[in-house]
Image (cartoon, rainbow, N blue to C red; front, side, top):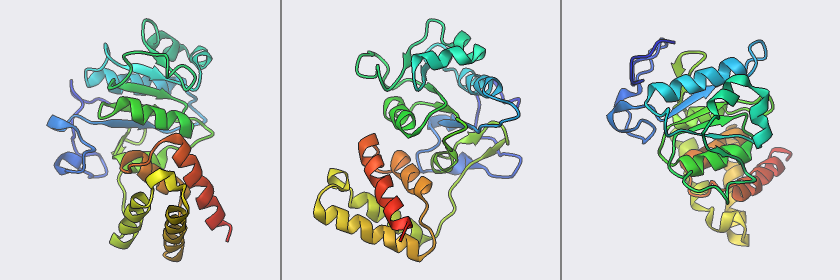
Length: 236
């Protein structure tokens, strides 16, 4: 992929042009907010890391970007990542409460599960984020929700759902005070999840991605609780 000096919102080969979008996914001046590098077993992690680094470098984030990984030892498994980590902050779930100056920084997210992806969204804020997907956790729905550029397929991700589907997701978010923990909110949540099921739109990854990107209750503990409730409904 050969983007210009600053990676801008040019139409993708598939014809998706996000340049006119007003949903907060594209930053001021057309600078992209998010890149998604899906896992490919035939390629492994090193080429994916290089694509993530290239994205951050080309939007001018080389000197300010941090790395977020499941643990510090994860860095050792990828030589490109190990080089990029030199003199750079490495954030993990374990050290996140002890690292200063990591909020509001462009972020390279390496092999995240839900906990790491939530942490990355919380720390990066509206700064650019590049996610190098792990083989065990799909980030495709996150990429759809945030409108990420797919650095492998050279296209922009987007959501495509009905107004009814959208309204149910919004109602789930509205019901989420206290993390859907008290009896009235939990009752509302279960009703709305049932509504998604009735229109054949109950997808755990999508509901969690909506909360991560657009919702008000994207903290890991709340997402874990939400995921368990979705699993219960899905089994009925």
